[in-house]
Length: 479
Image (cartoon, rainbow, N blue to C red; front, side, top):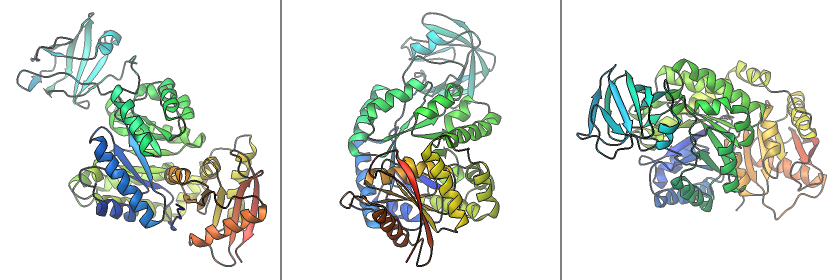
């Protein structure tokens, strides 16, 4: 199948999560038409059969619309939870003593099972434990081989199997649980473009996922732990893409630290040329309301001004009452920001300096030349996506058409800022400069971006068909 991208002026991409409110073919198609570039399958919920059905629908919608659509399989990661209580819930009073132990007996207001010995063994006196998304906080007062004694610093109601966050502790557990490994194998067999890797603490967590994926999908690392922030540069370097997962990050970091963490993650990802997605609670009120709050609209706009490659909707489209409206308003907010005269100058002023490689020099020059000759598009011949990524990092003033021989790479580029991906197939291989120019001009015209007399900037590599060989820049005029 050859995929052709329709013209889309919006540069920042939209990721939409599918769920009970958005799993039928009509809704998925409507979400794609409203502006969704990537669909997220959340493996914390649903069965493999559910995800397979959604995957099949997405591919069908992709063929109908004639443009690539990316699919993100987001694996759950190690979820830490307390056990159960005699009456389903208790109230913990601030200042009271409370024990966490390995006893299977249902809990009381004095104790509860913590079925994670790794936390008990790693915690120290003074360590904080956050319960139920941070609503309650315990401070460890004493440790034992099979228990932790704590003091309730912030009390409240605690019910069965609520989550536990441990912001002060590096846990000796992998980012991939046995469930995640099964989900990962299944998602890779389906043929998704990105694997969302949850609760990463160390660079080794990313390396493990990369080894399993074996190049079959890009690894999108979710930064949601303080320990990941401590290892941010190396984690981003090992990742193919990054997500600012503000849900758990906002639980384990103080609220005032989250905006700065978001900006730092985006800055590091842009420096390394890795796509970065900003996620969680972007239009949270639209789970139950047809319009967002003004603060939410500003939050989305801030992510666009910060230079994010994509912004993501979670429960808004997965379980909300207004999934189509949520994608529509996000599309409108992003488009409005990108129409602002200051926005592009901010993008270009914050662009990282090119590294000392020929490909980086070509990418930087492509953007400069496109502005000078008022080009309608930059056409990047990209075998594995690297050339399109490099040019995207420059945030050029015109759209980037990423021409790739495979549908898989075209779909992966759906999350990349400013790139309109086209799969040109392998039946007409590029062998000469004349072929390059002809294909580039045809792509720019068929995309609706250029017409007779317009200039198109072309970036390619000699010899053709060799990944990482970008070394050629041409300007062509559409006949």
